[in-house]
Image (cartoon, rainbow, N blue to C red; front, side, top):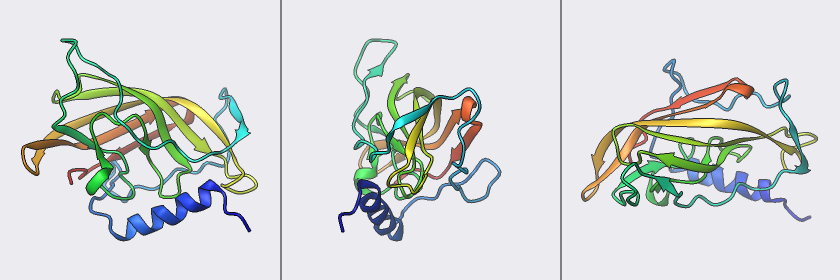
Length: 182
C-alpha cells in the first residue's frame, strides 16, 4: 500500500516532536493546538484540489526599507509545533508549519523590516479539511499576517525572534507561539 505525502509528513512530524527543543504556547498561556479544521469560514473559497504536502521552507524575498538583503544572522523557527532546533530556524522563512501533521501551514510568506525589533509578514494560511482523511482532504486558503518580536541572541552571533503571532481573520485563526529561540 502506497503512503500519501501527508502520511509521510505525519511520521516525520512525530519523529521531530520527540526531539522538540522549543515550546509553542497560546496567548492565553496554554499549549498551542491546531484549531478545528472541519469547515471553512463563511465567505472563504475552499480549494478543489487534493491536499499536498507543504513546500519545504526556504528563505523569503524580504522587502527592506533600505533596499538591503535580509540579515543572515536573524532567524525564525519555521516549525514551532515540532522543533526549533537545527534546520528549523530559517532566515525569513517562506513557509511556516503550524501543525504536527502538516494539515495547517502558512505559505508564500513575504516579510517587511526583517531584522528589526518587529517584523511583519503576509502569506496564505492553508488548512486541510481532512475529508475523507487528511491525506485526501482539500486545502482551503486564507489571507494571513504574521508578526514576530523579541529578538534574542543565541549561538555564535545569531539572533532569533522569540514570539510569533499568526492571524487569519477570515478563518478566525489567531495563534501566538512563544519560546522560539533555538
